[in-house]
Length: 238
Image 1: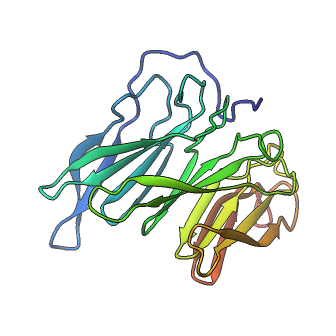
Image 2: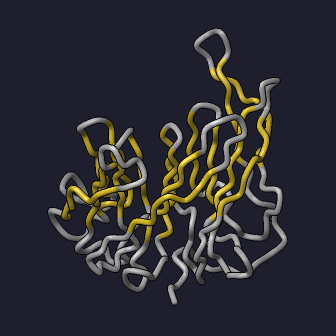
């Protein structure tokens, strides 16, 4: 089985961390709405709020240490929607259909349109701690539910916690890895196959140009541009 990726401390009776939603006013100013979003079934040290994404009145919040279907720290993602009269309501809780110990489903989330990507860096299908990304699509119509359409893995046996970072932009998805040492890190670019909205194909593997930079722990994609962070790179300063 996988090993936990977050620091382990004895579980103690603390509330799940809330997510604060800020709303815009008519003027170009931001104000705190004062609403705390909390999971309906939150547990101790679930890490609710570890990852967040928001678009078009939908917010996705990851809780990668939540137990799921009796499996310790398999992880979960909670979905909230903005109510017409204001405020936010929890509308769904997603868990992996194949939960396993320390999968950490929800360690990363990204929303684009009706598509949700969820990282599970502790998944072992491809390799020990190889990681996976689950793709959900929202059914059309009011109150549309979310259905799993794809599960992506590296398919190359790279045990680098694939899915610790994800970002969607239209038909593109970039996925980062989080190797323990930072060496041989990489990031992956996928594209949705034209005419097959549920099919994703790997288009590019971005290799770390030099070791020890933790390359791939943060990623972003916009149109034809991909950004990949290397938080420990010391070219400028050590």
